[in-house]
Amino acid sequence: MLPDDNRIIDVRFDEQGLLLRQTDGRVLALPIADTSPLHKATPEQRREWVLTEDGRGMNWPALWPLAPDGMVSVWAIEQDALYEHALARLQQVHRDLSALPPDERELVALWRMEAGINNGGFMQFFCNWGEETCHLAIEALGRVGAQGTRQCLNDMLNVAAHYGETEEMVSLSDLPGMLPPDERDRPYALDQAFWKYPESLAKAVVRHYAPRVASHTG
Image 1 (cartoon, rainbow, N blue to C red):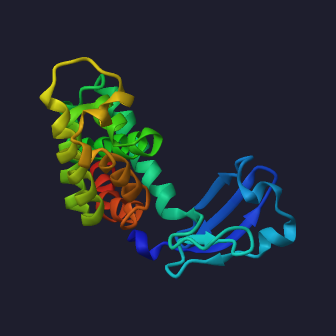
Image 2: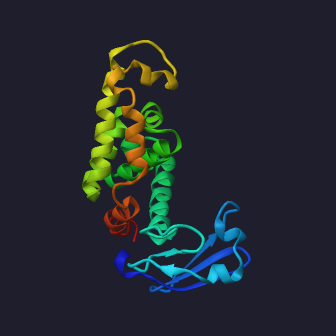
């Protein structure tokens, strides 16, 4: 079954969290975080959910604004599973990224990109993982068709090229000051553009990699 065909057909709550039954018979069990509006919602409010257009996400309009893929999204859950698989394989090869097959290398690079930029911005990602991983993530974004995110990351890398002009050891917070004056706001602007997610990256990643990983492991 292709990812797009596997929809949510039943939703239940239990003491642990949320249970989503899908077309293929699988049930996804999701804990509800203490910070989630669902944690404090009444039973009546919890029942007031609506499915996204593709049937693979859920929104609660009375609790928070509608999200295209849903505030609970099967796309995001399946993307996380792909990332976890790739990271587990990386551990098995003693963190030697070059020892992984191409699909798994790209998934690791995409995970590093999202984790790094969402946690501390592009420069945190770049300083933690370097130019090679950045280029690998750019290639992967092109492969999955996430052209808006790819352009954003490519622009970030072009800005980072200015930082290679000095051999001084500086802290991450000092790096923007090393740019020309008219470029100093550029890193934050690009981070903001990335955080808006120009397209559904989870959907693009799952559509491209899920069938490929399944064919390798099945």
